[in-house]
Amino acid sequence: MKLVKSQNKNFFISVIMSVYNDEKYLDASINSILEQTYKNFEFIILNDGSTDRSSEIIYNYQKKDSRIKYINGNRLGLTKKLNLGIKESNYNFIARHDSDDISRKDRLEKQINFFKLNPEYTLCGSYAEIINDKGSVLRKIKTVSSDKNIKKKLNYSNIFIHSSVMINKNNFKNLYYDNRFQVSQDYELWSRIAKNNKCYIIPDFLVKNRRHISNISNKLTLKQEKNSVIIGFLYKFNLELPQIKIEDSAKSFEQIVNYFSSKNINYKNDILIRKYIYLYKIVSFSSILRINYLQYYKIILFYFHKPSMLFKRFVNNILRY
Image 1: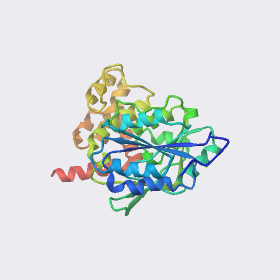
Image 2: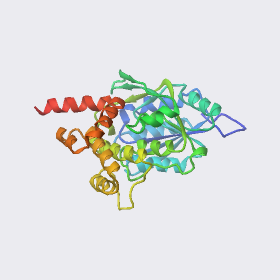
Image 3: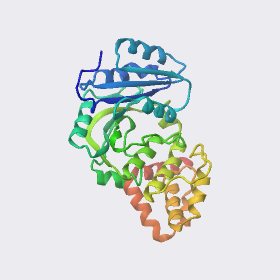
Image 4: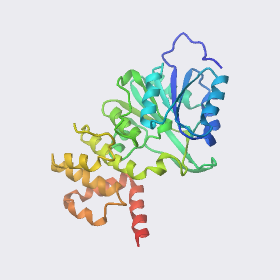
């Protein structure tokens, strides 16, 4: 299949997908993009050193559909692969899609229509259905939609489903994922975009987000939680990572925490609160005593915006005994 002929390529889309050993889910994932009702897109698929049949599967699809741009390569990790995909993209609108997820047939159409009507917006996501390895729906994720409420929520956590996102590069010229975040790189990017750009989440279930034992969300939980502490803190105070050598933010976590904690008492208290909330497996309940009692309300407010973390701490405390 070829791109639909058009005099105006301003609303063409570059769909970017990185693949690592997802042969089990690739057919459904790739087909969900190729069967989109909106046809004006290129599909950039980057093989991140897969050792299963992923490369063979992608190559067979590429032979059938010229919209697929296949980039085969060694293992680099998701962050670097996505940056390569952005570099290789030809169009203004960047849509993310994960190799084990499924996009609804009208996903691209709904999102590009939103941008046509709202050119001042930069970032657009959607609601999502969470599915298991067999494709059964486990739960549905809804969140806030408006730019104002999204900006508030990003103070506390990442509310965008990565594979639901589309970005207008015209409004955010220096588009890249920060290589210092090997996980939670999406949260870092959304928070950076949201500082000075308008965001929206379409209140419709346009993607199915798969959760299974081998995906990043399950394997790297502690790293993600450490990065969530850093990213949310930086976003709240409009800061950037310090000018110290950081190759992996999660591995440099204590160094980053100590740097900012020494600068300002407000920074220190905010970081302590975030550590207590997110690092519930390694930060004890008694650590809350180090926080000024006047700041306790912020913990309550945090749990109000992120109640799942209170539940996780509660369950973790039960499992300890």
